[in-house]
Length: 606
Image 1 (cartoon, one colour):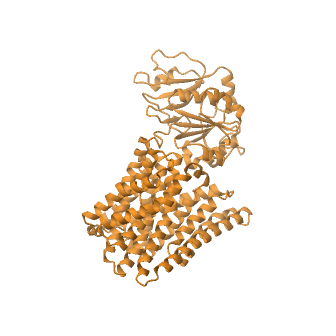
Image 2 (cartoon, rainbow, N blue to C red):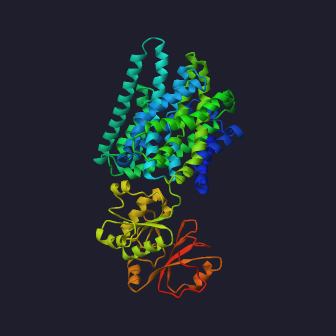
Image 3 (cartoon, helix red, strand yellow):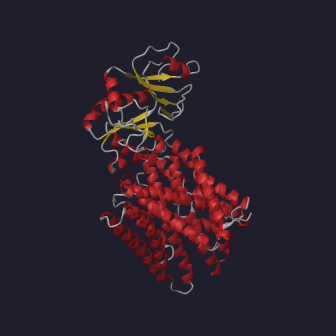
């Protein structure tokens, strides 16, 4: 099928965002569906042929996209994460990279049968665990903070290191024939580190100072940042090949830790761009896959891929993290999860042809080896990460925690009802006085400002299914919901009804700057408190095959308020306008109302 370039771009975008949406709906890692969609559109149906349709511009598009993705990754590397993961991250970078390089190179030479130069280049290329793959997997898996930090920091830091290491190893063997390898490689390494660290860090710091002094209007900050990322990447690569990846990573880390006033807005914007770019890249790469290159692999090549994934990576991580104080379960997870991504494919695409020109004919196996490793690791690790993490207790089994902001007496009673129903609750407040009652009731609490960096570093929120902002301040409730909406989803960020009418009242907080209204317009903060003082109570009612939801409604006292249903499988369903509330058998309904006479056939409370 012949498509013009505009139609090709439209198809790639449609497949990319379609795969992301479908992955969200069916709860599968997006990377897997992106790969499947790309293979169907390319090698199977021949709708997309990126190398032909984009020509020489394809490599440039991929390179610039990777630069933006790595900058976004650096922007999300926050130093406060290292309070819990610093030792592990250092081990994975300082020891993990050289040990992995050595083990992979040995395996490639002795098992894959490749010459030492080609084996060493391949070993350097695959030390990376790409953020283009890790970040979508972490978004899906909901790991505990420390384990997620290990994988995130390793992927983002090692990506430029791996690409740069591959280039230096390549130059080592090329220059060794002329007898001047040591000086040339040492010089290139110095240039790479100086240019990457100096240019990337310097531009980031100056840009941050300019933003802090309000020398740039708000609407230009994001466009300027994106433009500077491209300029730094291209400029650094002109000084030293593959050093641009290091530069943009450093640039992201510096800007992400300068505490700029608009940093959260910048992170969200870059995240949206990165998701789109990851989608485009994986659709393009899989669609461009030529099945004929896989025929070059013999049984020893397939055995090599198996050994790298099942033996070499676990061995390297286990040795690197020995004595680091990392729990055994976390070390096992880190040892298993190592999906490779776009940087590995892009690097081998540049170096393999040059190795062949230099006389290393077995370099023609590098491209198929890297492609098979990338797709095998994406498929295997993508499908097993969440399952293994849950088995080890390192991920949320169910998003059944309600994060309640505001420690009122009503919130305390609601949290007690949630815990009684089998869910989890956490009450957050910046008043120690208000937290005294929930603390005495045995409810988990956090004392501090929920929107602070301290709270972000201290709280484990990977299992939060619903946020309820329940303070007396409508504007603050809206601010909390807006702040958490990107991480837990705007559909799961609720606040108590506001005093100003939602529609037609200019005094009300606009829809786009607040959370969803919980429970209905009558559930105002003061009204809930008043009813609690009048003797209203929280009631948990279990549904069964005989005591259905319709019978429950018939038994409910007039004026009572349904709040939430705790599903039999542990999920949460909050009662709100424009939301389907249909609990079934085995679910527990939490309500707030005047005392009522229990129906004789009612199921026992949870």
